[in-house]
Length: 133
Image (cartoon, rainbow, N blue to C red; front, side, top):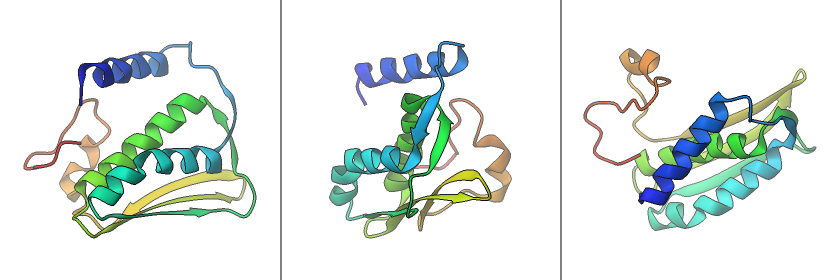
């Protein structure tokens, strides 16, 4: 990662924490397609099967498109980086009982149960990880 990437990440974090984050109607399927296109080369380079499963109809939600895309990019980027070469990462977009659902699954090492409460702490990185992500 370069300095520009870090600055952009800090700007996104600042925007997410402020009232400047505007809300709009967002098609999660379109966001997912765009993010996976952006990460296709990284996945190919690691021989990761990067897949997508979309609902038959658009899945709409309310939020900030840029922040939703950044969230999904982060999740998929980490999944690709931590999944062993030759593994798979799948993004699923669906709707269930009026709820928009966005799921990222992989066959990587997973998160130990004792670390579940720490994964949402800002700037947290699990001990013993060898890969940057």
